[in-house]
Length: 101
Image (cartoon, rainbow, N blue to C red):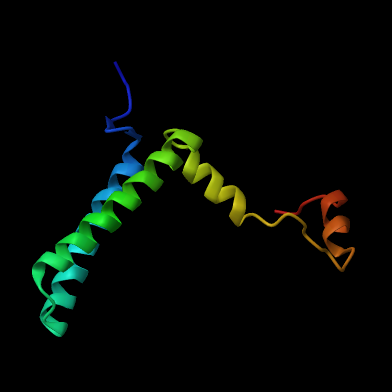
Protein backbone atom coordinates (compact mmCIF):
# COMPACT_ATOMS: atom_id res chain seq x y z
CA UNK A 1 0.00 0.00 0.00
CA UNK A 2 2.68 2.52 0.95
CA UNK A 3 4.81 2.17 -2.13
CA UNK A 4 7.01 5.02 -3.37
CA UNK A 5 6.02 6.76 -6.60
CA UNK A 6 7.60 5.21 -9.68
CA UNK A 7 7.42 6.81 -13.13
CA UNK A 8 9.15 5.26 -16.15
CA UNK A 9 11.83 3.54 -14.07
CA UNK A 10 12.53 6.47 -11.77
CA UNK A 11 11.67 5.47 -8.23
CA UNK A 12 11.31 7.94 -5.39
CA UNK A 13 10.02 11.46 -5.07
CA UNK A 14 13.46 13.08 -4.87
CA UNK A 15 14.42 11.75 -8.31
CA UNK A 16 11.10 12.87 -9.80
CA UNK A 17 11.56 16.35 -8.37
CA UNK A 18 15.07 16.49 -9.81
CA UNK A 19 13.75 15.54 -13.25
CA UNK A 20 10.93 18.09 -13.05
CA UNK A 21 13.33 20.83 -11.94
CA UNK A 22 15.74 19.97 -14.73
CA UNK A 23 12.92 20.07 -17.32
CA UNK A 24 11.70 23.49 -16.17
CA UNK A 25 15.24 24.87 -15.87
CA UNK A 26 16.19 23.65 -19.34
CA UNK A 27 13.00 25.11 -20.78
CA UNK A 28 13.75 28.53 -19.29
CA UNK A 29 17.36 28.33 -20.44
CA UNK A 30 16.21 27.45 -23.95
CA UNK A 31 13.83 30.40 -24.06
CA UNK A 32 16.54 32.77 -22.85
CA UNK A 33 19.01 31.46 -25.44
CA UNK A 34 16.37 31.72 -28.18
CA UNK A 35 15.54 35.34 -27.29
CA UNK A 36 19.14 36.48 -26.85
CA UNK A 37 20.76 34.76 -29.83
CA UNK A 38 17.81 34.38 -32.20
CA UNK A 39 18.48 30.69 -32.84
CA UNK A 40 15.56 28.82 -34.38
CA UNK A 41 13.17 27.13 -31.98
CA UNK A 42 13.68 23.80 -33.76
CA UNK A 43 17.35 23.70 -32.78
CA UNK A 44 16.55 24.74 -29.23
CA UNK A 45 13.86 22.05 -28.95
CA UNK A 46 16.24 19.42 -30.33
CA UNK A 47 18.94 20.33 -27.83
CA UNK A 48 16.34 20.46 -25.04
CA UNK A 49 15.07 16.99 -25.94
CA UNK A 50 18.59 15.53 -26.20
CA UNK A 51 19.73 16.93 -22.82
CA UNK A 52 16.49 15.92 -21.12
CA UNK A 53 16.75 12.34 -22.41
CA UNK A 54 20.37 12.21 -21.22
CA UNK A 55 19.40 13.48 -17.74
CA UNK A 56 16.52 11.00 -17.63
CA UNK A 57 18.92 8.15 -18.36
CA UNK A 58 21.28 9.32 -15.63
CA UNK A 59 18.43 9.57 -13.11
CA UNK A 60 17.22 6.05 -13.98
CA UNK A 61 20.76 4.78 -13.44
CA UNK A 62 21.04 6.57 -10.09
CA UNK A 63 17.58 5.36 -9.06
CA UNK A 64 18.52 1.75 -9.76
CA UNK A 65 21.87 2.12 -8.00
CA UNK A 66 20.76 3.89 -4.83
CA UNK A 67 17.06 3.08 -4.51
CA UNK A 68 14.34 5.35 -3.22
CA UNK A 69 16.23 7.19 -0.47
CA UNK A 70 19.76 5.95 -1.06
CA UNK A 71 20.98 9.00 -2.98
CA UNK A 72 20.41 11.35 -0.05
CA UNK A 73 22.13 8.85 2.26
CA UNK A 74 25.07 8.58 -0.14
CA UNK A 75 25.38 12.36 -0.41
CA UNK A 76 25.27 12.76 3.38
CA UNK A 77 28.01 10.13 3.76
CA UNK A 78 30.25 11.96 1.31
CA UNK A 79 29.83 15.21 3.26
CA UNK A 80 31.12 13.68 6.49
CA UNK A 81 34.84 13.91 7.13
CA UNK A 82 36.71 10.60 7.02
CA UNK A 83 39.28 11.72 9.59
CA UNK A 84 39.01 14.28 12.38
CA UNK A 85 42.27 15.66 13.73
CA UNK A 86 42.35 16.85 17.33
CA UNK A 87 45.52 18.72 18.20
CA UNK A 88 44.70 19.26 21.85
CA UNK A 89 43.99 16.84 24.68
CA UNK A 90 41.39 19.27 26.05
CA UNK A 91 38.60 17.44 24.23
CA UNK A 92 39.48 14.11 25.83
CA UNK A 93 39.90 15.61 29.29
CA UNK A 94 36.40 17.05 29.05
CA UNK A 95 34.99 13.59 28.25
CA UNK A 96 36.06 12.14 31.61
CA UNK A 97 35.32 15.14 33.79
CA UNK A 98 31.97 15.43 35.56
CA UNK A 99 29.63 17.93 33.93
CA UNK A 100 28.47 20.95 35.89
CA UNK A 101 24.98 22.30 35.46
